[in-house]
Image 1 (cartoon, rainbow, N blue to C red):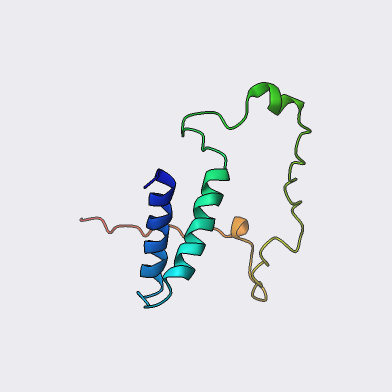
Image 2: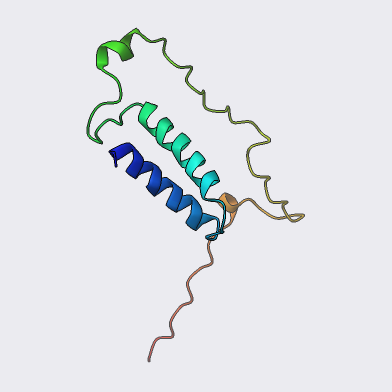
Length: 106
C-alpha cells in the first residue's frame, strides 16, 4: 500500500466517523477521501512558523496598502453633557465649606 493510499484510507475513516459510522457508504467515503488527498498533494507546502511571510525585496515592490484613517471626532461622537439644574453654579465657582472650629478647653 502506497503512502497516498494510506492517506486516502485515513481520510475515508475520518469521514465515516464524522457521519456516524453509516453502513454501505464506503465507496462515497473513499471517493471523497481520494479527492481530499489529491487536493492536499496539490496544496503548496506551509512555511515554518519562524520564516518570514514574504522576502523584503518582494514586499518593497508591491503597492502600499491604503491605510485606514482614524475617524474624525465629531460632536455626535462625544457623549451628551448632563443637563444642569436651574440656578446651579459651575463646579469651579463653588466655594468650599469652612472647617468647623473645635471648642477650646478653658
